[in-house]
Image 1 (cartoon, rainbow, N blue to C red):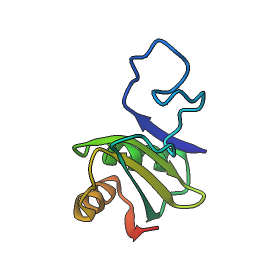
Image 2: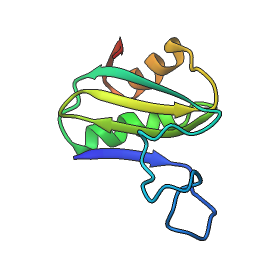
Image 3: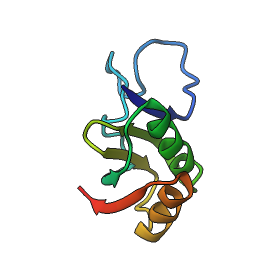
Length: 101
């Protein structure tokens, strides 16, 4: 189980903005930064949602995908995020940021 938050697309097509028929958090979009973080303590979908929800509130974040089974959280943002800001968001959700994966 994974939790993902995304900003809504306004396009009237099932295809992504890049013309692909697949639109996932792992896709690289022009003008964005993708970072993968390692988080400990996530065990279920609720945990994933809590972490993704807190990180998605950070300024510039476009997408967050948290996977409890691996402990990895993939964040797509407009610019690089401060690790301190990500750590504070993960702490607020009740989990621990180990660092970038």
